Image (cartoon, rainbow, N blue to C red; front, side):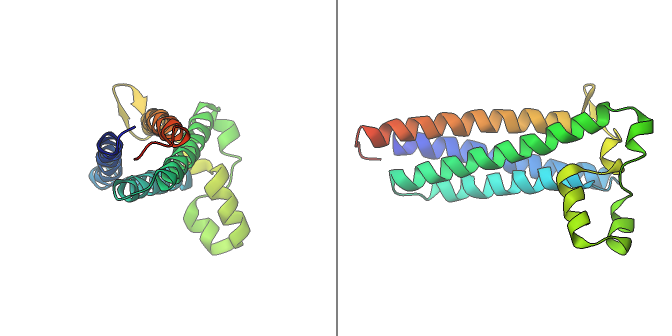
Length: 171
């Protein structure tokens, strides 16, 4: 993979990531939605993915480009996990999700930090509500589609950079 092609991929993925993070803040402000723990983790993964894309635009060596692409795959995979977990919680019946943990404000007031961290990775009852849809798809489903496409893009870039490294070609 040539350096200009690599930078174009990073630039495109950075643009998409900025759009996704900005749109998440926009619909939060527009609809007065409070993000649940899994939404917050998805937003964090999108931000970290975008940060690695910005870092990747300034990489000068093939080895570092490979590390950046691997980090992008990791952040996209983590975001896909959080989106899938939220989709699974939304598919459960209401009776089951009511037995989940309380909201974040109550948790910060009454629970220890390890329980709060557990709710950020496993979700709570706030994560099971479908508050907003576009074309019949909920926010976590759109987020999962974004993370799948970013994982596929960064995996493609990783394989291309890996083969460039194996050929010992200049980047």
